[in-house]
Length: 403
Ligand code: PMT
Image (cartoon, rainbow, N blue to C red; front, side, top):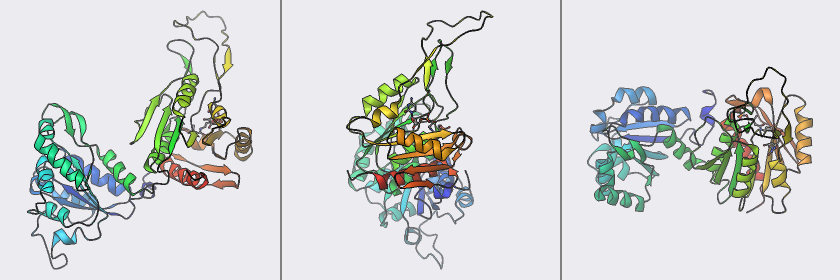
């Protein structure tokens, strides 16, 4: 995964200035600097005096590979005025963590330290990730300041709710580094699906035999979740109907959890109205037990027969509707990918289908896929599922009729 992450998103080569103010969440800013670097951003760090009390400049220097700026008076022959030099050519400034104090000073246009001066002198988007005690966050003064920042076009990311360093619980936690990185990725990703609604299925289904046993498969959900994340980043209203997997919902995606194919079908049909695109990535069980035992089945020592009945084919049903959205199918095969994938595409009359070999696609972080459409086959190079998903979304956006 490491080798490819730099090309997944649209942060590659972007100059991101990370402003770190004083707060216990400053230690998470180190992970954030690393995460931004992993997706290809050129990270430069400005630390406030209070921030320096929590994390050392050396940490950020090692993580970003650049000198860390801490004072308005840090200039040298090359960078006469750090607040101008650092902001020059920046694609975005992200203040994380943003303490109540820095938010207040930004709201009032103060410029009495490097970070505030830098923010005032910028000509790029400014993101602010608040992090503070819940009472400080809820205080009307802070809320007034945040409203002022929003009115000035500054993008507020979070805060999250939950347990706080002070032992209290409530709003004020800084968003996790991954979520902040994701927000920047989304900001810089072309909005190819803006104004569109996309429904995605992902993961396996679980067909219960009795209260503890069932029929399922080894789909991890990674491919479907990557597709949903790529759709959301592309600006789509994205609903993910997910079988049982151990993955968090991607940012900006509404997830509906299901177990069986019948429930997956019901939920898909319930959210389908208004959808422009349906992408069926789920490995839906073709059969389910004819009956589910109400109690745990007992061992008898004798052979046991399990009667299976076919499940509805969700994709075929959606694609056959008179008001069908643009439907994208998936096919996982163990052999003869081209022949089986194309025959599935034709049988279900799909404008687009993504084929993968089981050995390539199930469970792992990477995938090798071929896209099939009316123009033929389009193989994609092996890559992490996030990158494969982005390319699939770009392909479908090109085929999608104008909205
Ligand atoms: O989850 P991962 O570990 O990341 O693995 C990803 C994947 C390999 C599961 C994924 O890339 C994939 O190929 N998904 C489709 C699995 C499959 O084999 O589908 P199928 O050939 O059984 O069905 C063809 C299409 O019809 C699929 O789009 C499927 O979602 C859909 N279908 C199938 C049966 C059914 N009852 N309802 C459906 O909607």
